[in-house]
Image (cartoon, rainbow, N blue to C red; front, side, top):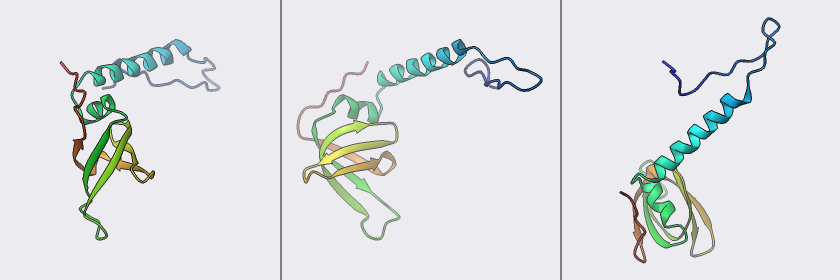
Length: 117
């Protein structure tokens, strides 16, 4: 089931004192890096946000289980974007971490960079 994508580590024991070679780990790290590069070429929200770091945006976020606030608008600048979250510096200098699962949509103040094939 595991195939050749990831080789399970072998740890030395009293019966098997052999330590695995580091080359296997280096190649796994390289494979993971290649996957990240491939992800950057795909049109996903986090990749679009990454291409527009530093731009002023307005994000519309919904928290369906919150009684304090269901819908919230954050206005500020994109600092970082990852697969599951967005980091913004708001206009009032506060920093927020917005989980992507709650993100409805994003409005940009200027033309966006959208370079996907």
